[in-house]
Image 1 (cartoon, chains in turn red, yellow):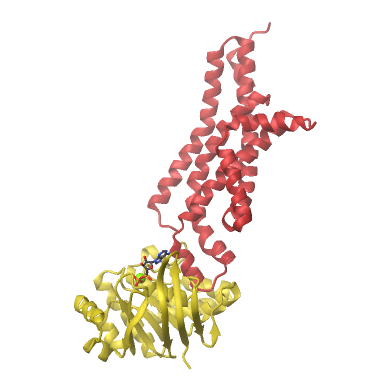
Image 2 (cartoon, helix red, strand yellow; image 1 turned 30 degrees about the vertical axis):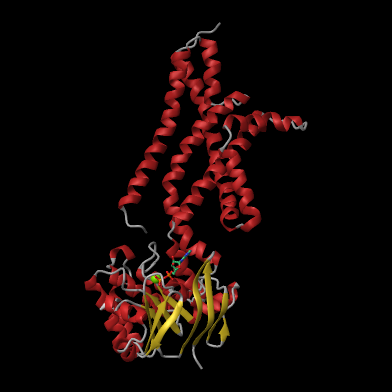
Length: 218
Length: 242
Ligand SMILES: Nc1ncnc2c1ncn2[C@@H]1O[C@H](COP(=O)(O)OP(=O)(O)O)[C@@H](O)[C@H]1O
Ligand SMILES: [Mg+2]
């Protein structure tokens, strides 16, 4: 059996980290786009679409991400569709991210004072014009800190995909730990790498939030 | 013919009937003060005239066109009737100038240069020509309210609805806003204003409407209404305010 040096371990972990990063980006961007679409339906979709989105959000927020991953992985398999782990991971994480971002952003739109709607309505703007020129620009500013903050949850969420066999950072950690019999070293390094990914994000979120609180609101 | 004609207007929030059949006509160029206790339905009345609240009965006609609930009618109505709010409601992410330009560009499809020229004229008119590039949070309350007036004027409305537009201001800032309104009245703008500034109502308004429990309880020229209130409710209201 080959001997692993610390450097070997690290090199393997860093290699796997790229999959964590890619999956995080795909989930965040895909979830963001889907979330934006759901947001529009949620606040402007009337009596048919808005409740559908609400149920969607409740389902994804009210069940463990792990179950969602299992369902995506094994569930589609039941229909004879052979789902590779990366696909199940990406689909589940995109759906999960979208649910949370929709809810975060809805809160931001609702945080725009009612007076802004009334003033723009009294000037003759239509709903779409109000949204585009008055409400969304203000909501967007409010949304940036919590959105960046949520990206940390996405990165950590990717760790669960190791369970359905997607070889990202956590899975690589498990494999290496089994091969080296040095679980503490390996998982210590894994944790450090996650921290290196997440810490800048949470710092950025905190910084943005502080900046928002002191700066002019424009 | 009156510019604004309100007939049998009824408005309820759930079980609670807030306007119980309002009849009121406002002629072109008239300045009408709406007074009354808090909760008597003054804001609701103005909001109905601007189409911000759906009505439950009666009718509102502005310049011959009857108010309906669909977007095209509402838009047409709001181009004729501007509204100014107690809390100013300026767009915080836009400068004073952009606040005045936005609806011109978006709603009236005015070109940028023309909208800007209009914005400068209107800001001049309210005495804020030099604040074109200032953001709302860099302006005092009185200045913000004057920008809000300029913003409404830039749409060239036939009438303005003012809902307690000085109530959120520090006392020393009330005068500058009332001065602007006084100027508008002198220029012949039709105004319907909810106010607690009785001295102003007496000086500037052609008619005073006293609302009580969702009805027009008493109305008439300010001289008459203030000097000889006929109903005990108005007597007690004026006694409390004066
Ligand atoms: N959106 C609303 N929902 C329920 N009740 C309301 C609403 N707006 C106003 N009301 C009620 O209608 C009544 C009249 O309110 P308003 O027109 O604001 O009075 P005023 O402006 O004369 O103080 C009050 O009793 C108030 O509580
Ligand atoms: Mg009021």
